[in-house]
Length: 145
Image (cartoon, rainbow, N blue to C red; front, top):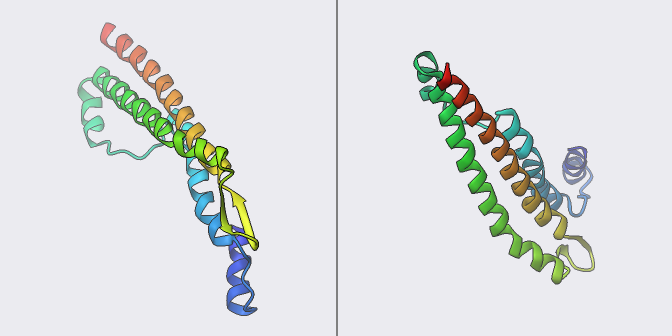
């Protein structure tokens, strides 16, 4: 964030931008999101519409846990698919020593950013599996009572 502020100040007041800030910022946003996704999945802080859950909670708590289980299983599958889909680009970035930026002026390897997408998606898939198991256990205990 400080780098972005310094770049804006440099561009507007000193007419000297900092090279590479736009590229770093663009890729950093994606990296930050994929680093935060597993924790958000485990903590239940991903954004979702809960109007149905609020209504069900009053009448059938087990149904809420069942919906949470289904939601988590779908999330696990989707993020596993994201990891699988992102792997070829990650492998290519590694095999070809891919960089972004302006060659000879400023470059940064793309591999760490591609790898964060793959690892973040895989970790999010595992986090959702953990949540699904926990929700399934809660569903069973609620149905048993």
